[in-house]
Image (cartoon, rainbow, N blue to C red; front, side, top):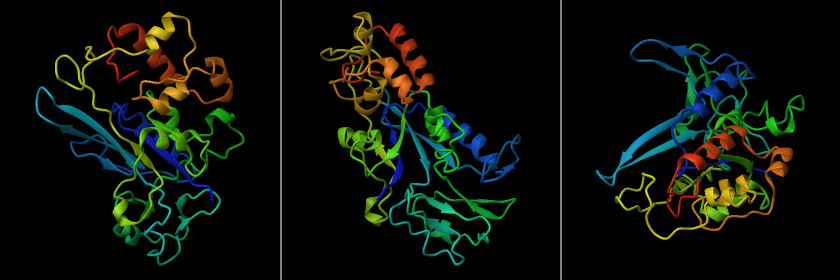
Length: 288
């Protein structure tokens, strides 16, 4: 059975909130309808969002680290929010595994939000309807869009390619390959909900100053994208997005092939090319 999902790389998420704003922009003007903003310009703003990024500080100086953690509906394979809905508004679609809400049936009772162990549902205070991430269901199948744009808005907006979209049950999909290559994991699997979205763990790096966050050199060097660029060798950025954190890098496809197939995030490419020329000594285990 097909199960579409997101794979989020915590190693390269920079907490820029591009995914948050692009999600809000697309969905507030799409099938979900207007998503309310409450006191947007006051000291205590609030509102309805399908996607949020939480930021944490870990460790102690000088070994401290900042962790950005994006969170949205995980589109569980056994979603507890579906059976508790008294009107059948919450349902799981068989053809692609997406968990969605029929707004015409939703009465805003909040049963689904209480059942969700991840806090991924939000009640729109103005519409009195439960809202959640749809993985841009109205976009990924939109034939009016170029094929390369038929992805969730958050995926297209991410400047570091920290979000990978695909069928996790298809072993040949980029999402499935990323999970296998990087040890992708589910949130709170003990609940038995089988969340479809996976996270790729952060790779702890050691540098000469002792911090895992800076860019100074530490340890043995390995072939980096910068050295590959200087040597005139093609860089497979899609493979880097899947295998970042590992020393081996695939160079079997040229950049123009990735562009033609629509699998390259141009914003991410621009960011990476800039970083190749500005970084002088990359850490051995962090290739991008």
